[in-house]
Length: 326
Image (tube, rainbow, N blue to C red; front, side, top):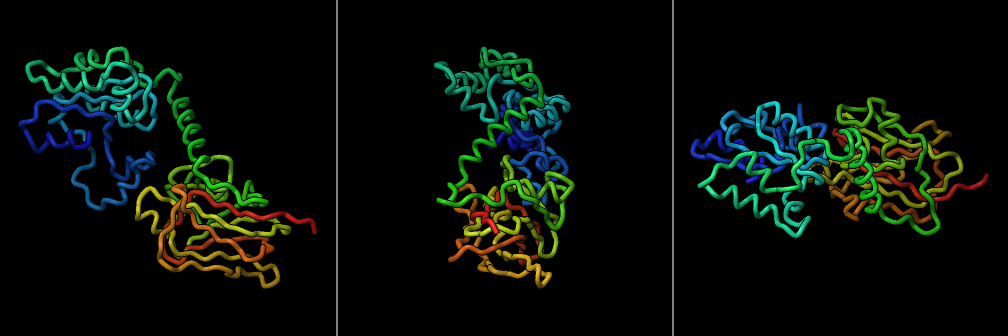
């Protein structure tokens, strides 16, 4: 049973007298979980929820909760449980994966000691016994040695950014990413966008920073689109789209789309590629959508448009080619 489930379960089983919960989620309801990209899909995925939060009064005096001190996303959940009166113990030097850290980070298996104490019903299981079990890994400072919550968040972003960069495919030989740093736009911004301004949110798929699980996010609408101005001297050979892949429903939203270029002469968008096979594609799992032209195409403005009424949210877009001197 998951940590959050073990807490709420005591609401239905009065015979439970002790609970050990490691890095539980306080809530996965839409209003609370939108800030946390690891679980925010749950608010949309589960249309019916029996409870708003996992904290319940029946569990408060029976539960010992552990959180690492180096994951700013977890610290928000920890703070909410603390406000509800739950006992929180912080583990120094680790993020969300507290059990693995306690088990393997030294020659002493502190996880084994902790579980032995939890299962010894001849003794009380309290915060003091938890602290004794984890030894020097206990800290009273819930924001770690990095100084403050902002620094913790920034460090995690830097680590995630480097990790995501390593999952991007190598550029094709002889071509550069023409999309990098160019002017972009999108059909709309939404409550899930990184910025309320479409010009800023749309840039999140072509800049230095890598975002997860998506770069930009439109509103749910008919044929949402993302566009970019490459310049008048751009010969495009290859287009790559890294899909949002944090769950299957989100992944499927981007299955069907058209790619268009703007005709200055006709003053309209002209489609030159359409994907309407209903087959989802991947992203940083190594399987992004890749379109390779037989011959490079001279493109000034390019637009990607969904062929449905839905949200549009890709993680990364790359447009490879060469700039030519006219």
